[in-house]
Image (cartoon, rainbow, N blue to C red; front, side, top):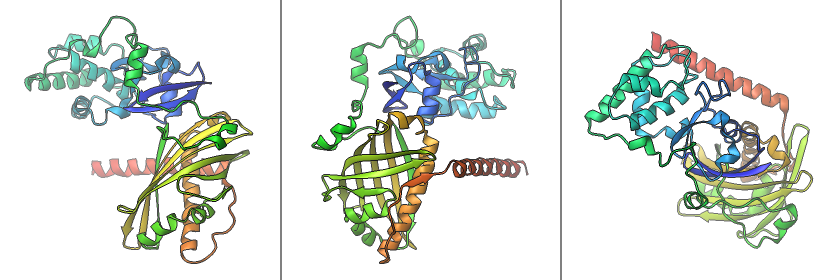
Length: 398
Protein backbone atom coordinates (compact mmCIF):
# COMPACT_ATOMS: atom_id res chain seq x y z
CA UNK A 1 0.00 0.00 0.00
CA UNK A 2 1.17 3.53 -0.78
CA UNK A 3 0.11 6.68 1.07
CA UNK A 4 -1.15 9.19 -1.52
CA UNK A 5 -1.50 12.89 -0.68
CA UNK A 6 -3.38 15.12 -3.12
CA UNK A 7 -6.10 17.74 -3.27
CA UNK A 8 -9.53 16.54 -4.36
CA UNK A 9 -12.29 19.11 -4.90
CA UNK A 10 -10.30 21.76 -2.99
CA UNK A 11 -9.80 19.49 0.03
CA UNK A 12 -6.48 17.93 0.96
CA UNK A 13 -6.67 14.17 1.44
CA UNK A 14 -4.14 11.54 2.39
CA UNK A 15 -5.28 7.96 1.76
CA UNK A 16 -3.48 4.66 1.27
CA UNK A 17 -4.02 2.68 -1.94
CA UNK A 18 -2.38 -0.07 -3.94
CA UNK A 19 0.15 1.19 -6.52
CA UNK A 20 -1.99 -0.34 -9.28
CA UNK A 21 -5.13 1.62 -8.27
CA UNK A 22 -6.28 3.97 -11.00
CA UNK A 23 -7.54 7.45 -10.21
CA UNK A 24 -11.15 6.56 -11.07
CA UNK A 25 -11.26 3.70 -8.55
CA UNK A 26 -9.41 5.88 -6.04
CA UNK A 27 -12.00 8.71 -6.03
CA UNK A 28 -14.94 6.29 -6.22
CA UNK A 29 -13.90 3.70 -3.63
CA UNK A 30 -11.62 5.66 -1.31
CA UNK A 31 -13.44 9.02 -1.33
CA UNK A 32 -17.01 7.91 -2.22
CA UNK A 33 -17.11 10.33 -5.19
CA UNK A 34 -19.18 8.10 -7.46
CA UNK A 35 -20.06 10.82 -9.98
CA UNK A 36 -16.98 9.72 -11.91
CA UNK A 37 -18.15 6.79 -14.07
CA UNK A 38 -16.20 3.89 -15.52
CA UNK A 39 -17.04 2.74 -19.04
CA UNK A 40 -14.49 1.16 -21.33
CA UNK A 41 -11.61 1.34 -18.79
CA UNK A 42 -9.23 1.83 -21.73
CA UNK A 43 -9.28 5.62 -21.96
CA UNK A 44 -11.53 5.60 -25.04
CA UNK A 45 -15.11 6.43 -24.00
CA UNK A 46 -14.40 9.48 -21.80
CA UNK A 47 -16.97 8.61 -19.12
CA UNK A 48 -14.26 8.80 -16.44
CA UNK A 49 -12.99 12.28 -17.38
CA UNK A 50 -11.93 14.49 -14.46
CA UNK A 51 -9.81 17.61 -14.15
CA UNK A 52 -6.18 16.97 -13.23
CA UNK A 53 -4.46 20.24 -12.36
CA UNK A 54 -7.29 21.97 -14.23
CA UNK A 55 -6.98 19.95 -17.43
CA UNK A 56 -9.35 17.12 -18.54
CA UNK A 57 -7.81 13.69 -18.01
CA UNK A 58 -8.90 10.04 -18.31
CA UNK A 59 -8.95 8.82 -14.73
CA UNK A 60 -9.30 5.14 -15.72
CA UNK A 61 -5.80 5.07 -17.25
CA UNK A 62 -4.17 7.40 -14.73
CA UNK A 63 -2.56 5.78 -11.67
CA UNK A 64 -3.54 7.44 -8.42
CA UNK A 65 0.06 7.32 -7.15
CA UNK A 66 1.12 9.33 -10.21
CA UNK A 67 -1.16 12.15 -8.99
CA UNK A 68 0.81 12.73 -5.78
CA UNK A 69 0.49 16.44 -4.98
CA UNK A 70 -1.94 17.09 -7.84
CA UNK A 71 -5.22 18.99 -7.78
CA UNK A 72 -8.06 16.69 -8.86
CA UNK A 73 -11.56 17.96 -9.56
CA UNK A 74 -14.42 15.51 -10.09
CA UNK A 75 -17.92 16.37 -11.25
CA UNK A 76 -18.92 16.82 -7.58
CA UNK A 77 -16.30 19.56 -7.27
CA UNK A 78 -17.97 21.53 -10.06
CA UNK A 79 -21.30 21.99 -8.27
CA UNK A 80 -20.66 25.70 -7.75
CA UNK A 81 -18.70 26.27 -10.96
CA UNK A 82 -20.39 28.94 -13.09
CA UNK A 83 -19.51 27.36 -16.45
CA UNK A 84 -20.76 23.93 -15.39
CA UNK A 85 -23.95 25.47 -14.03
CA UNK A 86 -24.64 27.04 -17.43
CA UNK A 87 -23.84 23.76 -19.18
CA UNK A 88 -26.20 21.77 -16.94
CA UNK A 89 -29.03 24.16 -17.75
CA UNK A 90 -28.19 23.99 -21.47
CA UNK A 91 -28.03 20.17 -21.42
CA UNK A 92 -31.51 20.10 -19.89
CA UNK A 93 -32.87 22.70 -22.32
CA UNK A 94 -31.44 20.99 -25.42
CA UNK A 95 -32.27 17.41 -24.30
CA UNK A 96 -28.55 16.60 -24.36
CA UNK A 97 -28.76 13.55 -22.10
CA UNK A 98 -30.83 10.40 -21.80
CA UNK A 99 -29.41 7.67 -19.58
CA UNK A 100 -26.88 10.15 -18.17
CA UNK A 101 -24.00 7.70 -17.78
CA UNK A 102 -21.64 9.65 -20.02
CA UNK A 103 -22.86 13.06 -18.78
CA UNK A 104 -20.34 13.73 -15.95
CA UNK A 105 -17.37 13.18 -18.26
CA UNK A 106 -19.15 15.01 -21.08
CA UNK A 107 -19.68 18.06 -18.85
CA UNK A 108 -16.02 18.13 -17.79
CA UNK A 109 -14.89 18.04 -21.43
CA UNK A 110 -17.55 20.56 -22.52
CA UNK A 111 -16.45 22.95 -19.78
CA UNK A 112 -12.93 22.88 -21.19
CA UNK A 113 -14.28 23.78 -24.64
CA UNK A 114 -16.37 26.65 -23.27
CA UNK A 115 -13.29 28.08 -21.61
CA UNK A 116 -10.97 27.67 -24.62
CA UNK A 117 -12.87 28.19 -27.86
CA UNK A 118 -12.97 31.80 -29.06
CA UNK A 119 -16.31 31.27 -30.82
CA UNK A 120 -19.09 28.70 -31.11
CA UNK A 121 -17.68 26.72 -34.03
CA UNK A 122 -19.69 23.48 -34.44
CA UNK A 123 -16.82 21.66 -36.15
CA UNK A 124 -14.38 22.47 -33.34
CA UNK A 125 -16.97 21.49 -30.74
CA UNK A 126 -17.48 18.10 -32.39
CA UNK A 127 -13.72 17.57 -32.62
CA UNK A 128 -13.30 18.59 -28.99
CA UNK A 129 -15.99 16.15 -27.83
CA UNK A 130 -14.86 13.29 -30.06
CA UNK A 131 -13.20 11.63 -27.10
CA UNK A 132 -16.49 11.41 -25.19
CA UNK A 133 -18.82 8.70 -26.48
CA UNK A 134 -22.59 8.69 -26.00
CA UNK A 135 -24.82 5.77 -27.04
CA UNK A 136 -28.13 7.60 -26.52
CA UNK A 137 -28.36 11.11 -27.89
CA UNK A 138 -26.75 11.19 -31.32
CA UNK A 139 -24.73 14.22 -30.09
CA UNK A 140 -27.00 16.83 -31.74
CA UNK A 141 -28.40 18.12 -28.44
CA UNK A 142 -24.99 17.99 -26.79
CA UNK A 143 -23.38 20.09 -29.52
CA UNK A 144 -26.27 22.58 -29.43
CA UNK A 145 -25.95 22.90 -25.65
CA UNK A 146 -22.22 23.57 -25.73
CA UNK A 147 -22.61 25.95 -28.64
CA UNK A 148 -25.32 27.95 -26.87
CA UNK A 149 -23.21 28.38 -23.74
CA UNK A 150 -20.18 29.58 -25.73
CA UNK A 151 -22.37 32.03 -27.66
CA UNK A 152 -23.96 33.38 -24.47
CA UNK A 153 -20.65 33.86 -22.69
CA UNK A 154 -18.94 35.53 -25.64
CA UNK A 155 -21.98 37.82 -26.01
CA UNK A 156 -21.40 38.85 -22.37
CA UNK A 157 -17.79 39.74 -23.29
CA UNK A 158 -16.32 36.81 -21.38
CA UNK A 159 -13.08 36.21 -23.24
CA UNK A 160 -11.74 32.71 -23.93
CA UNK A 161 -8.92 31.39 -21.77
CA UNK A 162 -5.89 30.64 -23.97
CA UNK A 163 -5.23 26.89 -23.94
CA UNK A 164 -7.72 26.41 -21.11
CA UNK A 165 -5.07 26.89 -18.44
CA UNK A 166 -2.48 24.59 -20.06
CA UNK A 167 1.05 25.79 -19.34
CA UNK A 168 3.30 23.43 -21.31
CA UNK A 169 3.07 20.70 -23.90
CA UNK A 170 3.06 17.12 -22.69
CA UNK A 171 0.84 14.75 -20.70
CA UNK A 172 -1.71 16.17 -18.31
CA UNK A 173 -0.02 17.01 -15.02
CA UNK A 174 3.49 16.91 -16.49
CA UNK A 175 4.04 20.53 -15.46
CA UNK A 176 3.94 19.61 -11.78
CA UNK A 177 7.26 19.97 -10.01
CA UNK A 178 8.05 19.12 -6.41
CA UNK A 179 8.04 22.83 -5.57
CA UNK A 180 4.61 23.27 -7.17
CA UNK A 181 3.22 20.37 -5.16
CA UNK A 182 4.57 21.74 -1.89
CA UNK A 183 3.13 25.18 -2.58
CA UNK A 184 -0.33 23.95 -3.64
CA UNK A 185 -0.89 21.30 -1.00
CA UNK A 186 -2.35 22.35 2.31
CA UNK A 187 -0.61 20.85 5.34
CA UNK A 188 -1.38 17.16 5.70
CA UNK A 189 -0.18 15.04 8.54
CA UNK A 190 2.33 12.32 7.78
CA UNK A 191 1.45 8.64 8.12
CA UNK A 192 -0.27 7.76 11.39
CA UNK A 193 2.03 6.71 14.18
CA UNK A 194 2.68 3.12 15.15
CA UNK A 195 0.58 1.59 17.94
CA UNK A 196 3.54 1.80 20.30
CA UNK A 197 3.93 5.55 19.69
CA UNK A 198 0.42 6.73 20.58
CA UNK A 199 1.00 6.73 24.32
CA UNK A 200 4.11 8.86 23.95
CA UNK A 201 2.40 11.66 21.99
CA UNK A 202 2.57 14.82 24.08
CA UNK A 203 -0.25 16.63 22.27
CA UNK A 204 -2.98 15.53 19.86
CA UNK A 205 -2.29 17.02 16.40
CA UNK A 206 -4.83 18.55 14.03
CA UNK A 207 -5.31 16.83 10.68
CA UNK A 208 -7.37 16.97 7.48
CA UNK A 209 -9.89 14.07 7.38
CA UNK A 210 -9.96 11.85 4.30
CA UNK A 211 -13.68 11.22 4.76
CA UNK A 212 -16.35 13.34 6.45
CA UNK A 213 -19.82 12.11 7.47
CA UNK A 214 -22.71 14.30 8.58
CA UNK A 215 -25.06 12.89 11.24
CA UNK A 216 -27.59 14.19 13.76
CA UNK A 217 -29.80 12.97 16.58
CA UNK A 218 -32.28 14.44 19.05
CA UNK A 219 -32.84 14.09 22.80
CA UNK A 220 -35.83 15.25 24.81
CA UNK A 221 -33.80 17.52 27.11
CA UNK A 222 -32.90 21.24 26.95
CA UNK A 223 -29.60 22.27 25.30
CA UNK A 224 -28.15 23.62 28.54
CA UNK A 225 -28.56 20.25 30.24
CA UNK A 226 -27.08 18.37 27.28
CA UNK A 227 -24.11 20.74 27.01
CA UNK A 228 -23.41 20.39 30.74
CA UNK A 229 -23.53 16.63 30.32
CA UNK A 230 -20.96 16.81 27.52
CA UNK A 231 -18.56 18.44 30.00
CA UNK A 232 -18.53 15.17 32.00
CA UNK A 233 -16.07 13.19 29.87
CA UNK A 234 -16.38 10.00 31.88
CA UNK A 235 -20.17 10.06 31.62
CA UNK A 236 -20.05 10.67 27.87
CA UNK A 237 -17.59 7.78 27.42
CA UNK A 238 -19.95 5.53 29.39
CA UNK A 239 -22.70 6.32 26.87
CA UNK A 240 -20.56 5.45 23.84
CA UNK A 241 -20.83 1.75 22.87
CA UNK A 242 -17.50 -0.05 23.07
CA UNK A 243 -15.67 2.87 24.70
CA UNK A 244 -13.80 2.84 28.01
CA UNK A 245 -11.32 5.18 29.69
CA UNK A 246 -7.86 4.01 30.75
CA UNK A 247 -6.96 7.01 32.88
CA UNK A 248 -8.38 10.11 34.59
CA UNK A 249 -9.82 12.32 31.81
CA UNK A 250 -8.73 15.91 31.27
CA UNK A 251 -9.95 18.21 28.45
CA UNK A 252 -6.43 18.45 27.00
CA UNK A 253 -5.95 14.67 27.06
CA UNK A 254 -8.34 11.74 27.31
CA UNK A 255 -6.90 8.23 27.02
CA UNK A 256 -8.99 5.15 26.38
CA UNK A 257 -10.04 2.36 24.04
CA UNK A 258 -12.94 1.72 21.70
CA UNK A 259 -13.95 -1.68 20.35
CA UNK A 260 -15.49 -2.01 16.90
CA UNK A 261 -16.75 -5.10 15.11
CA UNK A 262 -17.67 -5.39 11.40
CA UNK A 263 -19.04 -8.91 10.98
CA UNK A 264 -16.16 -11.31 11.82
CA UNK A 265 -13.60 -8.49 11.83
CA UNK A 266 -12.95 -6.85 15.20
CA UNK A 267 -10.63 -4.09 16.29
CA UNK A 268 -9.69 -2.54 19.62
CA UNK A 269 -8.29 0.94 19.11
CA UNK A 270 -6.15 2.37 21.89
CA UNK A 271 -5.64 6.07 21.70
CA UNK A 272 -5.89 9.57 23.05
CA UNK A 273 -8.00 12.64 22.32
CA UNK A 274 -8.41 16.26 23.29
CA UNK A 275 -11.72 18.02 23.92
CA UNK A 276 -12.60 21.61 22.99
CA UNK A 277 -15.82 23.41 23.98
CA UNK A 278 -17.44 26.73 23.10
CA UNK A 279 -20.20 27.70 25.59
CA UNK A 280 -21.19 30.77 23.55
CA UNK A 281 -22.73 28.73 20.73
CA UNK A 282 -22.91 25.35 22.53
CA UNK A 283 -20.52 23.63 20.19
CA UNK A 284 -17.37 21.59 20.56
CA UNK A 285 -14.76 19.44 18.93
CA UNK A 286 -13.05 16.16 19.82
CA UNK A 287 -9.80 15.29 18.02
CA UNK A 288 -8.19 11.91 18.55
CA UNK A 289 -5.70 9.31 17.33
CA UNK A 290 -5.77 5.56 17.83
CA UNK A 291 -4.22 2.26 16.79
CA UNK A 292 -5.26 -1.38 16.73
CA UNK A 293 -2.21 -3.51 17.51
CA UNK A 294 -3.61 -6.74 16.14
CA UNK A 295 -4.35 -5.46 12.62
CA UNK A 296 -1.63 -2.79 12.62
CA UNK A 297 -4.32 -0.26 11.69
CA UNK A 298 -4.23 3.43 12.58
CA UNK A 299 -6.89 6.10 12.62
CA UNK A 300 -7.25 9.80 13.18
CA UNK A 301 -10.69 11.14 13.99
CA UNK A 302 -12.49 14.40 14.57
CA UNK A 303 -16.02 14.97 15.84
CA UNK A 304 -17.54 18.43 15.66
CA UNK A 305 -20.88 18.94 17.38
CA UNK A 306 -23.37 21.76 17.76
CA UNK A 307 -26.49 21.82 19.93
CA UNK A 308 -29.61 23.29 18.35
CA UNK A 309 -32.74 23.94 20.46
CA UNK A 310 -35.93 22.43 19.07
CA UNK A 311 -39.50 22.28 20.33
CA UNK A 312 -39.14 18.82 21.85
CA UNK A 313 -35.63 19.27 23.30
CA UNK A 314 -32.25 19.40 21.52
CA UNK A 315 -30.91 18.43 18.11
CA UNK A 316 -27.25 17.49 18.04
CA UNK A 317 -25.61 18.13 14.65
CA UNK A 318 -22.46 16.08 14.11
CA UNK A 319 -19.64 16.24 11.56
CA UNK A 320 -17.47 13.13 11.79
CA UNK A 321 -14.15 13.11 9.94
CA UNK A 322 -11.64 10.30 9.89
CA UNK A 323 -8.60 8.82 8.19
CA UNK A 324 -8.05 5.05 8.41
CA UNK A 325 -4.96 3.14 7.29
CA UNK A 326 -3.76 -0.44 7.65
CA UNK A 327 -5.57 -3.76 7.32
CA UNK A 328 -8.94 -2.45 8.53
CA UNK A 329 -8.88 0.21 5.79
CA UNK A 330 -9.66 -2.64 3.36
CA UNK A 331 -13.14 -2.98 4.89
CA UNK A 332 -13.49 0.68 5.86
CA UNK A 333 -15.48 1.75 2.80
CA UNK A 334 -17.47 4.96 3.38
CA UNK A 335 -20.76 3.06 3.03
CA UNK A 336 -19.80 0.61 5.75
CA UNK A 337 -18.46 3.34 8.01
CA UNK A 338 -21.59 5.44 7.46
CA UNK A 339 -23.80 2.51 8.51
CA UNK A 340 -21.59 1.78 11.51
CA UNK A 341 -21.61 5.45 12.56
CA UNK A 342 -25.40 5.62 12.29
CA UNK A 343 -25.80 2.56 14.53
CA UNK A 344 -23.22 3.80 17.03
CA UNK A 345 -24.82 7.24 17.23
CA UNK A 346 -28.30 5.75 17.66
CA UNK A 347 -27.07 3.71 20.63
CA UNK A 348 -25.16 6.68 22.04
CA UNK A 349 -28.27 8.89 21.79
CA UNK A 350 -30.35 6.29 23.63
CA UNK A 351 -27.76 5.91 26.39
CA UNK A 352 -27.38 9.69 26.67
CA UNK A 353 -31.13 10.17 26.97
CA UNK A 354 -31.34 7.53 29.71
CA UNK A 355 -28.48 9.09 31.67
CA UNK A 356 -30.01 12.57 31.40
CA UNK A 357 -33.24 11.05 32.70
CA UNK A 358 -31.40 9.57 35.68
CA UNK A 359 -31.16 5.91 34.61
CA UNK A 360 -28.12 3.76 33.83
CA UNK A 361 -27.03 3.59 30.17
CA UNK A 362 -26.06 -0.07 30.52
CA UNK A 363 -22.87 -1.92 29.64
CA UNK A 364 -20.44 -0.60 27.01
CA UNK A 365 -20.33 -3.43 24.51
CA UNK A 366 -18.60 -3.26 21.14
CA UNK A 367 -20.82 -1.79 18.47
CA UNK A 368 -21.29 -4.39 15.74
CA UNK A 369 -22.06 -4.05 12.05
CA UNK A 370 -23.97 -7.11 10.88
CA UNK A 371 -23.43 -8.06 7.24
CA UNK A 372 -27.04 -9.06 6.56
CA UNK A 373 -28.35 -5.98 8.34
CA UNK A 374 -26.07 -3.84 6.18
CA UNK A 375 -27.26 -5.56 3.00
CA UNK A 376 -30.90 -5.04 3.90
CA UNK A 377 -30.16 -1.45 4.93
CA UNK A 378 -28.51 -0.66 1.61
CA UNK A 379 -31.36 -2.38 -0.25
CA UNK A 380 -33.92 -0.32 1.65
CA UNK A 381 -32.03 2.88 0.83
CA UNK A 382 -31.80 1.92 -2.85
CA UNK A 383 -35.53 1.07 -3.03
CA UNK A 384 -36.41 4.32 -1.30
CA UNK A 385 -34.36 6.21 -3.90
CA UNK A 386 -36.06 4.41 -6.77
CA UNK A 387 -39.53 5.04 -5.34
CA UNK A 388 -38.68 8.72 -4.77
CA UNK A 389 -37.48 9.17 -8.35
CA UNK A 390 -40.52 7.32 -9.70
CA UNK A 391 -42.95 9.49 -7.73
CA UNK A 392 -41.02 12.61 -8.74
CA UNK A 393 -41.12 11.68 -12.42
CA UNK A 394 -44.78 10.73 -12.16
CA UNK A 395 -45.59 14.06 -10.51
CA UNK A 396 -43.71 15.95 -13.21
CA UNK A 397 -45.55 14.10 -15.98
CA UNK A 398 -49.03 14.88 -14.66
